[in-house]
Image (cartoon, rainbow, N blue to C red; front, side, top):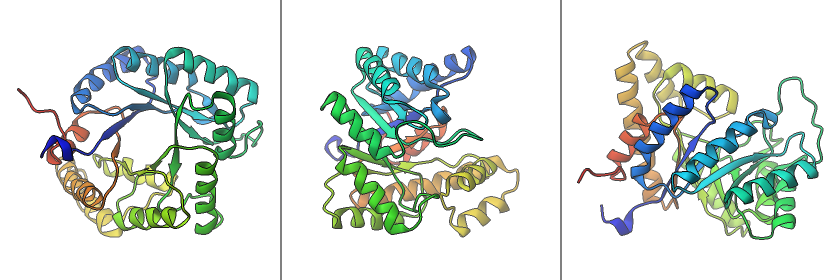
Length: 284
């Protein structure tokens, strides 16, 4: 593939909980940096529970010479805490944020001064001008807590109008859902790139658990094929690689602006996908 037609990629990691996990993630990042990611994002736990780990991982990525985007959730936050966190990130050299409402911790009331991600985006813009490039979340298959598809689209529009630069989607396996969402966004006159989030398939049980929790649909034919493999991990991974490669090809052919990989702090599946797509690093 010609370098000029190379679709940009970005990578998502979660903050490790142990020193051993941190060492392993450093190795994984080095294996993936050959793909020349546009940026690497680091997730935030429910209610900001992993904030220290998030910021430490962001700091490590920046020290490795790669652009880092910090996830930034506002559930339970106050304007004062958000202001302090923005100052800390700016001082670290962070130029990109993934602004989210965030998940409510178990047994936690709404609380805080921000009720929606659009409130957070507007506050970041008011406080910091254009210091940060702001990503927001998009849900081609509708947010699981949305009252209706129309209200979900309006919630997305509110984030864009509040000042978001770009969006990253929840993962999906139905390209039509993505293309329809992009059409709906265009029809509202929202000039914002919508980058598909890509989840490699490496484990049947893990994928089912994630999807049940997040509202991401696993098409019936994929679910049944995965179930038919039982504990045959090699077949699950081979089938998953075929399915997700085909999805990425459809997205690229349909004009997706970039691909954002949910790595789950692993390198093998993402590298295999990118090798199939002609995006992996080539040995000299």
